[in-house]
Amino acid sequence: MTGLPLEDFHPKIATFIAAFQENNDIGVLGGRVHLTEPRTSCNSIDGKKLYDRIQVNIPFATHTLSWQVLFNSMYPEDPPDFIFGPADNDFVPPLEEIRSLVKWDPDDPLSLKVVICELIEFYKAFQIEEISQHTRLQFEYASLMNTRKFTEVEVHMPHRRMMQTWETVVKFLIRLPVNFSEIPEYFTKLESPGEDMAILLVTYQHPGEKMYPQLYLSPSVEYALGGSNSLRIPVFPNDGCLFTYVPQVCELLENMIDLVAKGFKKRQEYIAAFLSHYGRSVLEYDAESFEQISFLFENQDFHFLLHVHIPPYFPKDQPEFVFQSVYHTTSTGRPFNQTVKDYPYSPRWTGNEMAVRAKTFMEEFITDFKRSAVTAGYSR
Image 1 (spheres, rainbow, N blue to C red):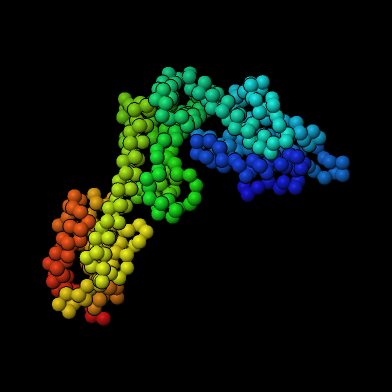
Image 2 (tube, rainbow, N blue to C red):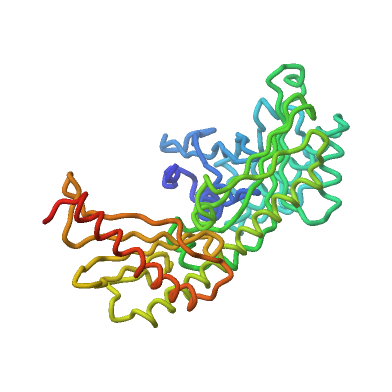
């Protein structure tokens, strides 16, 4: 929702809501809390409705907590009351321990956010108490916390009355403490702004019997690591535990980030070597991600283009050469070209040696390419 109609609230209450709408990223995912369903508890003297109640929809461990916030427009400086959703009937936080309510500051616009953040902390503790009824889940959580590496964790268990149904699932949402600073800036600036993060969602069905892990990355990180198809997290073993499995996923991400960072530097070196050797023949090259460079070459009066496509995980993955005739097309009118993925190559070579050996291969291959273009292609 873009925002509530603040002009329809009591001015004092509107101040709390406006500040919350501007600063409401909460939880492991940093998701936005949506404020909806404005209502009123009474009318003003002139009969105009003044809203003083709202519903806050809070993202929590892939669920949404729907809580009612009840101000009183007759006494707008008083702290609000809260009504928690039907699924949270057993959640009864100790009011005397909620400092932001006990010491409510009506002059601080962020007071509402502070209260809700504190209530969420109590809700987290409530959920941990809920899973203590199940030995496996309690062990998984306690052992993960004992590593002291994974401090941002949300756990959600359905209401006790639902625990007998076959649909019961318990979810652990874990923010992975992975350093993304080594990812080249080029990748992160292309996608939507926001914090780089990696989230592991672990779903237990029939508490503790079946476990399903899923990895979620922020868009820029996913793009930098080659897209969702490149991400294959380890299978969770039947006798596995979270405190050993989660570090494996972290290590996988860290290794991929290291490969991407090193690959970026190696692509720079590779492009620089080609520019040094064949600079006069360069048509264009990618000066940001260093993923492509194109040349116009001539061999015995036969002119052709060479497009070099450099993969993200270079030098582990081999560059692709695309030879293109400037004279010939296919039957559909497209430029005649031939892609070569298998040629002499070693990831241990320096960029300079790769450039030299590429030229040697090109000089050997161009005769076959010219013959193919003449026999299979159509003259322009």
